[in-house]
Length: 214
Image (cartoon, rainbow, N blue to C red):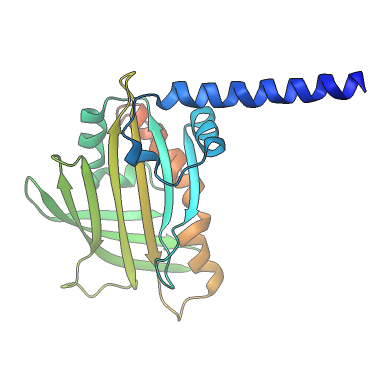
């Protein structure tokens, strides 16, 4: 009985410690950044720096995938790096080629050539940057003959009190019904952990880190 009591007390102490660590990690952040996130998920985010939340409910047949990341850079620097959309080839694993079609101070259009197994896709994405809201969002360029069905997503950046940045990220990538389901799943979900890890390394390094050659 005494041994069981000790285990219960130890478990409670561990849980309390995890919650305290989580509270310290994101203490003072805008509550909107953590909407729908549990204490256990916050603890994981603080421990790993990346949290893959999963599909957003109510998004229809093609659901958005939502993740949270903590970057070891101030919000100003993170925003500048994420807006450098012509540099995604430096860290995203599937990009073969990319080129800027047009760019202004608040938006751009970038063409991507992406490879997965024996399949290759070319498409153009319109990015919009809104520094007033610390937000970057994107979708397919409707004026281009895209070889994928749908690409949507966004980053929303939140300042952490210790000078780091919390990013709330959501993405949707849909290829085509003609493409094997395994390839679609790899592009939409399977590559996400590696892509997020590479993104974090790149941003944390101030844009100097490069993806490994495959």
